[in-house]
Length: 247
Image 1 (cartoon, rainbow, N blue to C red):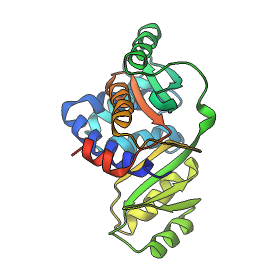
Image 2: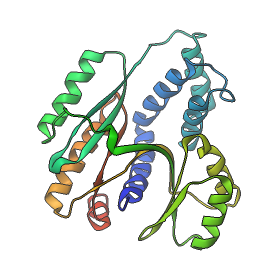
Image 3: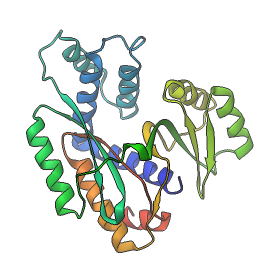
Image 4: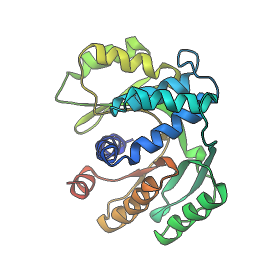
């Protein structure tokens, strides 16, 4: 688990920058539209509810959200996106999962495979067994005492809380994610990041900076692809390397 919360926080900050360029909004709209295909009411559609909450956390205008929902329900014309998850290995044997929403499966498959290949990875093999789907909330350790936060989290339905070097990581079942997140927010505790994600059940420690950067280059290029919604990896890279890269 070590290093995962740092990466989650960095990704959250990066997403805020991406939003200014419009890249993140495009991906959020795709997710909302796809989720709305199962129903346009967020009260009865947990996936849509989560997608809307994520969009709002990045200050997406309400009109954009409403139009994306209508495209998903068929009230407005829109593109139908196919959902695909690719599994493979990065440099150092790191397991990587890539969630894609695309209107062209063949193009997406070729481009994702090419990214893996040119960045020293291999798009083959099964790695899903290395991950569990969980709600994941990261909080700065300077904000609140450990015992107090743990009490709030467990009362709200969290499964566990990890204390790391500079952060707390609260872990919960995906169905309890919104309740746990809302409880913490109501306590006026700021969140570094909050998402439903795939958490590695085991990690590969990467101490060598050059290898770590090679892995992160692969992850960055995958995340920058227009069809890629999420990238999950089971690396454990020291905080100082992550911070140096993103300083």
